[in-house]
Image 1 (tube, one colour):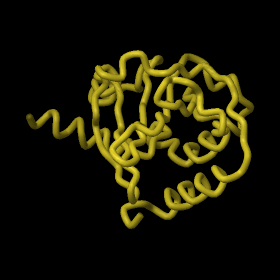
Image 2 (image 1 turned 90 degrees about the horizontal axis):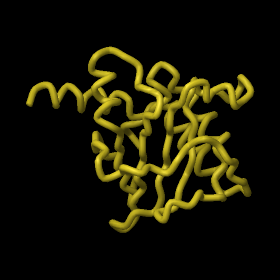
Image 3 (image 1 turned 45 degrees about the horizontal axis):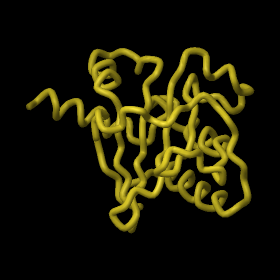
Length: 160
């Protein structure tokens, strides 16, 4: 974890600690990605034997490149691979006024989060309030831990 800040390490530790606790998924507006094959793979994060492929749409990349906000409907996908097999998907999705679905202390602008199993069913053992809590620390980076990687991808794309 030497590539992570203390804040990121704290969130990761909190995630794994709380993952062991019993929790229940809550319904929200996030949808399982219908177009995952057409999304752009902008970075890979390795954590021990876990490989995370980060994906988003070309439209989201274009918006950031033009200095705009990611458009409503944008999904950022973390595809969690273990032993070279997809284990689960973490989806953060943005929608108009979606932040209003939560009390102020839980809001991450208009982003909502959901975990899915590979078959597209919601992972009922994950609590999205925990996701929001950790991602709030990344407010200045579109609530993303890989926003700098996304911007670096855009820069590389420009150079090609």
